[in-house]
Length: 238
Ligand SMILES: [Zn+2]
Image (cartoon, rainbow, N blue to C red; front, side, top):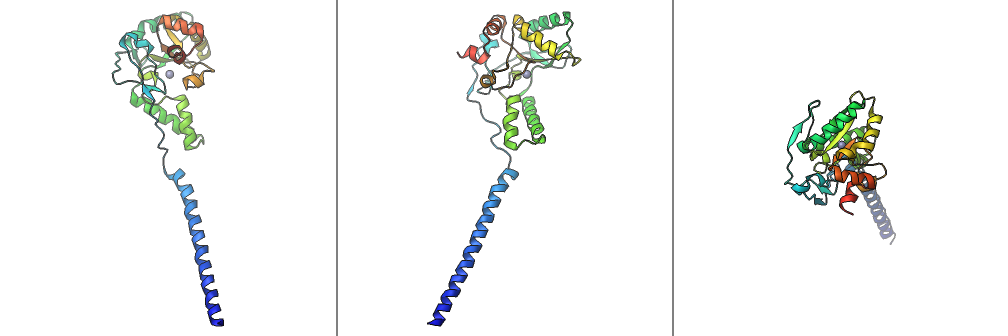
């Protein structure tokens, strides 16, 4: 009887050891499962497909709406022209008004330059990656960097620069940035251009305020958008 009791105690002890080992092992697995994925795997949700293709009607070529929800359609066609003073290109149809605007700015002592005009899909992709890595270097997490980069740089296929209808206007000397942005905010609509990403409209445009980014929509539309204070999103999809 006593011998039987000892055997039972040994069995219970052995079962206890197996159980404790099992708990320790599963905790170890759970711990490593929690750490490894973040460190070892890149964020696969980096590119999210836009909801729909933008509608492109050749007779309303300057009213195409391209943003994070509307990507550039396959049938989009643009004839480019290279600007004289810089290396950048734009849709040749916007050049006469762009030239007039620049002539008038220069006449008033300003030194504007088109820093960015047309951009290929590949160049857009590179810009987004660069922005993302810059944020990672600043210490943001993988997910934060991916989300923040998209606030500044549009995803490939969703940038107006890929249309050839948008220009980023800066100061050649770098000293007149503020004066140029103010002049553009007050006058660009007279030449058919709108401030595309205004301050306070980030929730609608999905893009941070960019005082340098101007989009060609034609004079009549630009005047209306200037007078009403609407974004292109609100103007086209009321
Ligand atoms: Zn821009």
